[in-house]
Length: 419
Image (tube, rainbow, N blue to C red; front, side, top):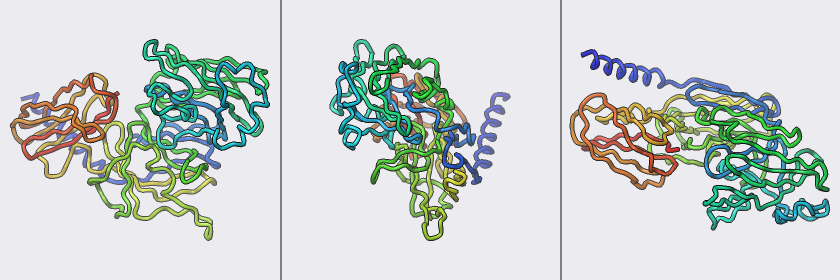
């Protein structure tokens, strides 16, 4: 009897939490006058950190398999493919920049749709899965060997040559020097020094690595200034999403719209982006797009509604918005099945799915990838009441999945991230 009461209490607390959270609250995030800062934000916990965005030049991806390397476009860092073999490093001179720095075909930019394609990765051969742009992965030794040389601008007049030599045993090896070869710096960045982070940052000016992010799986959105590539390349101020956080945009809708319905969720990190606002030159004020709602599905599988209400521009860097849960993930109306979370999420070996059903009956549990393809189905029997199921996900590729629980005509869907 005591065990049953414990389950009942947990169930009632879950429902109470859902009821309390189902209200919109107002929030403001500021990245400072002139957009000098970057803010990292959790949908459930609010702003996690707010840090200067001008103290780094390049950033190295710590987790994942893309070995992405970014440049700091906020800090006006620019990068060009030098058009030289890495073996020509020592013989390069200032004269090698002739026609390169003025030719747009050689300039490289970060992707504004994926964290996996930093400026250093943009010369990759898309037909070769082992070509990462700045180097090539050897699947036998598991070493990425650098094969490219770059020119990089890190100040108004400060140009350097730079090459990433390798990523070996969790250590990035790279070097940079003045264009004439003087003042050469041999540098390393060790991934284990940034455990739990998405990127580690480096200042070429100060020859210094920088730890500036919250832990990877704690933040959902970042507010910052960045470079957009369409319809042409220019600097914008907006909101980018974390890896594995997906966003749906609803327009035109009544902002009171409570759920995303059948809207598709998008993995592109700039789905919120910057164009929910525009500058009215006749009145010199920023205006917010009418009838626009964003639904953010965070890394825990919760879906949030976000409605922007104001933007101050460069005078303060303030973003104003309302947020609140949409229909909680795994709690579809009129369904005899309710799911209350999947843990751990992200997962690597196994997950435990918490659910409650109205009846005892056979059921199926399907795992569906982001393309809609069913990758696994488990037939089981569910009893009425609150229960948990353990699912083995060790052999699934990394990515975003939906766990679909079906019992007769009843259906529930919960999001899962596989590391």
